[in-house]
Image (cartoon, rainbow, N blue to C red; front, side):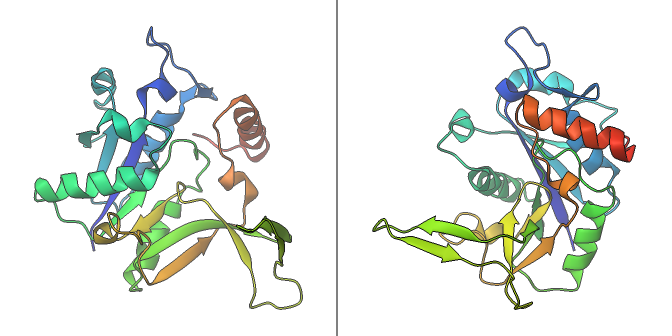
Amino acid sequence: MKVSAVIPIRYDDCFADDGTPRMLLAGHQLWEITLRQACRSAQLDKVVVAYDDERFVKHLTPPHGSIEQCLRPKILSSDKSTTIDVLAFVANWLDQKAISTDYLMLLEITHPLRPREIIDDLIKNAQSQESDSLITCHPVHYNFWRRGEAGQMNRISGAGENSEVALYEELTGICSLFRPHFLATNNPFGDQVDIIPIDRFWATIDVRDDDGRWLAEQYLERLKIAL
């Protein structure tokens, strides 16, 4: 089974106009952390960096290993675009290059605290299944309220006393898997969806601002995690 990782990168998220790094975590740039994690994998067939600015090319050189460089349109970096849109573009790009893959794995740079073996473990898990997608999630043990289209409030209960009922926070960017041919459809997740629950809170930390970075740094120090 072939799995290609996709790392979406927006230049403006990573660098200021003068080339200065925007966000460092323990002295490392976020995109470098995720790229190293992908290149360390023994199970990934290819690593695709989907960047949006030619200025990024000079950074995509060894020692990061062999990677595929995919320049995506600027429109796919707008606030109206999603990571699913980027995955769909990369799926078509790979197809045009005659590069076959069974799954695309989404690796967002804002999730730097991935458990060390999670990428390879998830791929091994997928080999024994027929899932259209495997989504990384965080189990949630609270109740929620959701406002409907008519303005009514609906209570959504968590597990409670029924062990068969559960809620999961979708965190696709940790390392979710998608079948390429579903990505450009109205149902990018496909029909057979499974989840990969991640109980460790620190692994779900989303580093998008100074608060997220501070929290990640606290856990790096507490758990003695080396990036």
